[in-house]
Image (cartoon, rainbow, N blue to C red):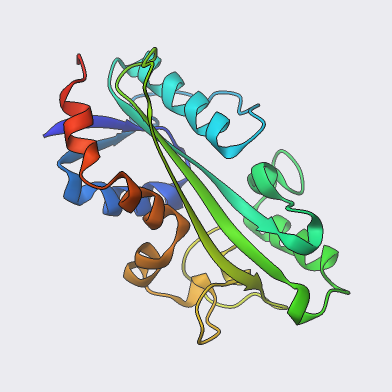
Length: 203
């Protein structure tokens, strides 16, 4: 089984990606378990940030690495918070802080104009200098609720409605969310390419 470093310190992402990668012949170890600090994410988009994180983890560990960069794009806010989703209300922002800010900014926006999407880019590298990284993307369309609901998930999940029955992502089961989510779609897009890709890694 191929060891791969997951370049994230977010426990919610770790749980989701471990579950999603379980069927791809990968033994997933987090960068935290290896004592690898997170790099500065100063890319202009999700793809750039995912590659920064994956290459950093691969360089520090000597192992192949996979990284996710994702966020929420709200149409009424011109696509914000976007790449700044995790730090929307400041560098030490909590999920509750970010959700509060989002609701405040949308306070005067009617339901029909609260369309949004979660977007994800997954980047996999065989080593830090890999000239041909494996990239996949996913998007989960929906809209923003007026109040948070649900105790599951993480981040903006209590505010994001991505299913026709009106439940938020935080009200879905883990299996439902993994099947529908931007992250699940991105990993599905990697499909059967991942084992063959990793088989050519030097480590």
